[in-house]
Image 1 (cartoon, rainbow, N blue to C red):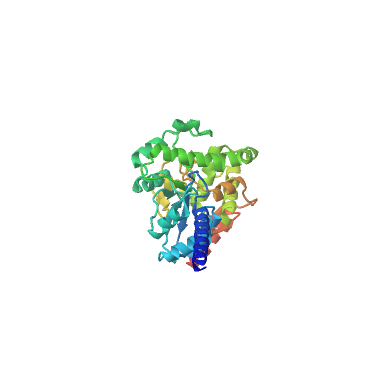
Image 2 (cartoon, rainbow, N blue to C red):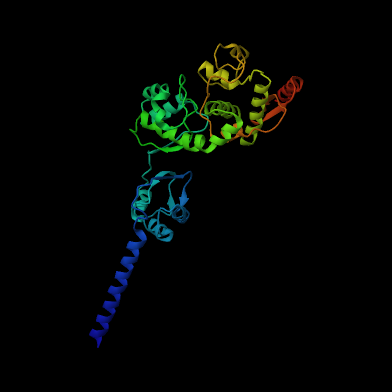
Length: 333
């Protein structure tokens, strides 16, 4: 009788173990056979449960509780801050291994809004993604990329056409591929999305990016962008010089915090104190908030604005109001 009981328990044990093994296999296997890399950025240490839930919601794993348990079992109740790369074709255990051993990725690079092509070139060079000089040389040959499927300038650089975003550009990608990746993003996120809106406003892509780039460099707070856009359009309508400091600095070739009176006389086609109308092209690579503001400006009568210490601006309709605003801001300082 005992032998039968032992044999029965053994059989049940084997069945349970087998079922558990099948369950674990099903719960840990990849969600997909396709390599679709995703960036997971932890700005601060994160507990295993929170991160596991996040990866489950991103459709990278099948079982959040199982991943959290495995991480804790391996001494990772807290996951180190950093940039990680995962793909749904990785198993749960492969993803756990990356987290346990803190294998941070260098495959992703962020290009912030408002950066110039020169600054982008520096970032890519630092990360080993592309040679700086080759990148800038290719940016000065826009028609080399005409197959992208959107209008590109003939005699200028690609300034303004490289969409600010986070890209998967592993070290060694090369300048040409990096540029193509950013241009494709601009085509998708700007040209195709806002093509009809540009036509309704009577703007070419080049004009839109030029206006948006000035807004980008002049404004810190998103809620002010449509108001600054209104000043630009109001001045253009009256054929007033735009008098935007950021264009002067772009023409000078370097950035600084304060524009001096003598700087306003610097001879450059980008100097909107000396030249009326829009500058020849964008002065930076604008983000979507500035692009939307250029397409949907506020309806105002403002012609002037001056920066306050908090980064916001005072807007005025007349030059007398503008001078008074300047005096009040200086007095407050």
